[in-house]
Length: 81
Image 1 (cartoon, rainbow, N blue to C red):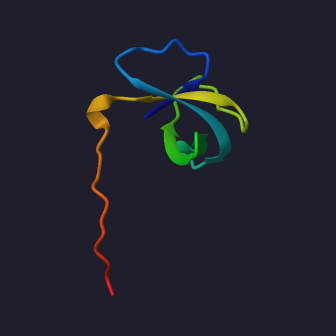
Image 2: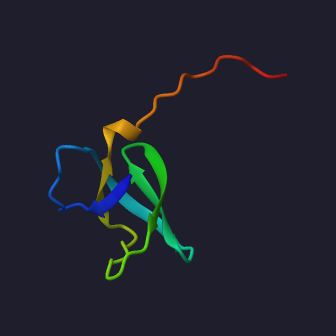
């Protein structure tokens, strides 16, 4: 997943979702973002690149998802006692 400012030109090779930065934490090699998209909370790590601006809490973003990286997992109805 890539995180971009909301006004980024959206490349059609990705699936795009809108989001809002809820929180961020600098962890040295990357920044961990908590993002809300619809009713879903997403945790995403973004590595640092020279000159890249850190996204701010409350900022609207666009999340770019490569279709080849999406996996749908079956839900389990088995209970472990």
